[in-house]
Image 1 (tube, rainbow, N blue to C red):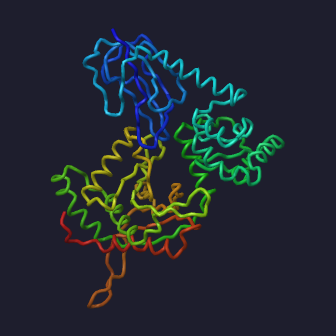
Image 2: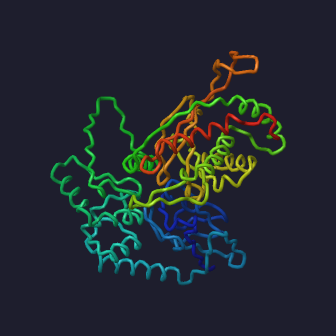
Image 3: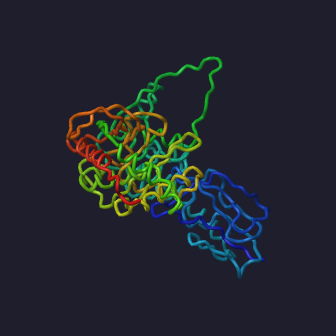
Length: 449
């Protein structure tokens, strides 16, 4: 029997590492082809790593909770299928006669780096983080003062890169550490890519009493990430929200007429979401300065070439995830519908790839799904705007006709846009929102299905 390496696969262009959250097989267990060996986590997405061949798991090279770089050997499987190994496109298992030696060498190098650079470290730091710290002259004490956004507070590449522009301005990290030590109640809040300590802002967390019968629930990993991201967004961006009420009667009537034929012909359910996304993509082309980001210095605007619209989706767990429809403006209604249905289905089944929740330039959230008439959503950083659509309700309205005004029943909904007032003023934000409403109100009843 020959030994083969199980490799941490490449999971997206921007994903360099993953955390092992659970081994589903133990050493000595028999593994079938395509059977799950372990579960990993990258940002909000959990994934399963299957075995590309049949055999016995002889060695696990990392423990649960450890962070592993893409391309690293994570396990060794003994197999007779040397000539018939099926290799997934994202992985490239190779013969592992020297697998244990290679991993031992890798771990020795890692240990040497820790001893020479951060011998007294009380936390785990990835080789990349330590390399950046070494190149930037960051001491161990300074590194350990950073609040990390990774699992169990681990400092990530994003954390240290976000810290660098501000580290020499006013000693923010040192100040926050001393304050926390002296008061015992103030904490540095690390949120997403920006820590509050970077800007010398301390958050006083209120004391919370626990009464008899109260239940204490530990946040799961995804809820902690969402919590950090929301706090960071409110800290980074001054939020302003504008509202518009739109008469979407034509839109509702067209969809009611078209949805059965559309589903029969295309095999896809036609919800309102693709219609909203199409209108948003059109309005972004009219107002491209909504499709921007602000760089980490806060002084430069990055105007995005692509229109990638994220759609907030509620998961069965109660958490939220935002899969992204890439180049939405280049898709027709069928293409948008297929993308929406596919991403929503796989989001609920926890089957999204890491790249599918990254790269968004604008976000749409449908609070109408929960019967809400409007919302004031928090911006999904590093974007500068997010739009919420409320439930569609019938209302009596004054209708202008050539014969005079009459009262009729119309379908109305509220649209709300939260935007970053650093770069989006009321004129731009309000005009963009009005344009989206105009596209929805002007929906052609005779549009081909």
